[in-house]
Image 1 (cartoon, one colour):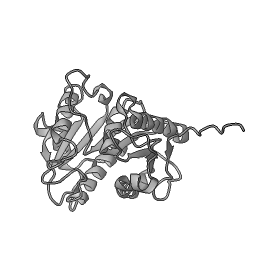
Image 2 (tube, one colour):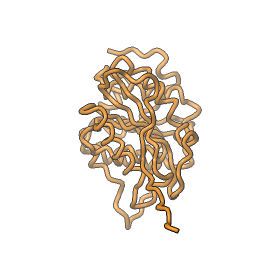
Image 3 (cartoon, rainbow, N blue to C red):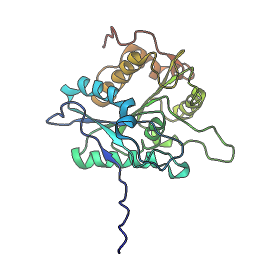
Image 4 (cartoon, helix red, strand yellow):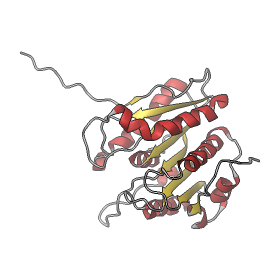
Length: 254
């Protein structure tokens, strides 16, 4: 009896969140969290739950501008060391956006390991911005090269991290932002005081901040004053901006 070949796993884009616009002029790719090492296939609903709520909010906010928001479904759950599989899947997703929609700007928006994938795969010419929420970053090994930042040049980057994150040290995202800021002034980082890895305690404020940033980066809307100040402030001020309680409730745009 002939052996049946094992099907090759491929990454894929989920259906557009919310009503897909007739004419797409910008895309958000939502990158869920993952695991440090795993070859298991992600559970579709559980894996994407962390980004779907934010994705729906962004889709509503950008509907009039032609925004399409898609969740990226990975081949496997794990980053898996030098294979960096989640980053490769994110890069594939950008290529797929170009194939589907043509020359439109892309914002990579990830949480946890997905945030690392967003930062790592930002070098594609279609990517104009990155939102990294509670990015999982490895502890620096003196024998290993540092997490790359050159691919962030020319992109607007927002990093958000809870100060009580026990899964990934928020100081690691500060150090990465500080290195990237030397070559790219359009990087800001907000700290969510007393919040943990999932950013649940201040989720509304975090999502409002992400919406403000994405709409400005993709469609040229005016940033809110806190985001504008964070982008303009020299380090470390613009990389340790506190996210105010109630952010987004009464924003005034210029």
